[in-house]
Image (tube, rainbow, N blue to C red; front, side, top):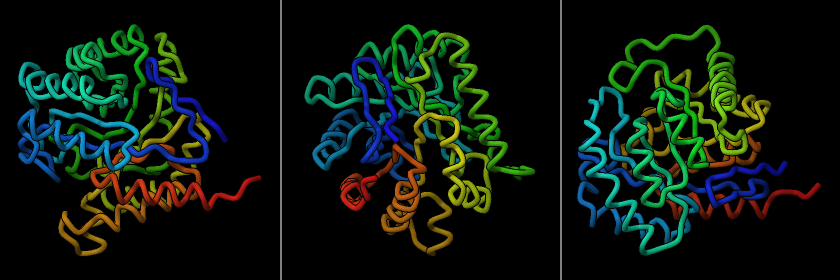
Amino acid sequence: MIQQWRCRNTVFELGSRALVMGIVNVTPDSFSDGGRLSSTQAAVEHALRLASEGADILDIGGESSRPGADIVPVDEELRRVIPVVREITQRIQIPISVDTVKSEVARQAIDAGACIINDITALGDPDMVHVARESGAGVILMHMQGTPATMQRNPSYQDVVAEVGAFLEERLKFACDRGINPLAVALDPGIGFGKTNEHSLQLLRHLEAFQRIGRPVCLGVSRKGLIGKILNQPLENRVIGSVAIACFAIARSAAQIVRVHDVAAHRDAVNMLAELKVES
């Protein structure tokens, strides 16, 4: 099934091959690479490397969403993110996503060249709707129970798959009712965001359930704690586990976008899966 994802002047045709979104965290405290890319130069060099490895999109973030993370003031987030977005767009042509919950950061990032808003609060900032609608940016709406500071304090669901699905449907309707083009929206079930490991595994096992909503699914599991727990591996040894989950989802047509730290490995996996698909 071919789906379009419209992100300003970029239109992705999602069919035979999933998109690989490379993560660039310009933060001192992200769970995987906090502090390593805290300077503009380091972040840009990392972004260029991910692009050379075959990233379809670069996702630039200036505020950690790890469990227990503190809120970053808007001025500080702008200081981290905007120079990186601006320099990347001046050096290479690649779609850029801004990972933010703040409408002002999204607005300035789009002005600097970004074309996607990756919002873990699913338009929680009331002004984010206006920014997305007026810019025509692509939008990723994610499910999260609570906030990064509170989300892992005893998360609870009666039926995690049904409840996450209902939330994503409601936020899609919310966005469309306010003038955002439905073709601009992708959905993220929020693996690990206000979920126990068992909740996340249930979502992964039944990820295809979200295809009925009719929008692309973005899957973010790269290097996450559930992989470390299951495989008893530290962060640096979770690439194979991350790729395994991505392949499981893509092979079942349950995910169209994978958000990852290790672009080269995922790009190889995505390309191989595309070749193995049987034409109907």
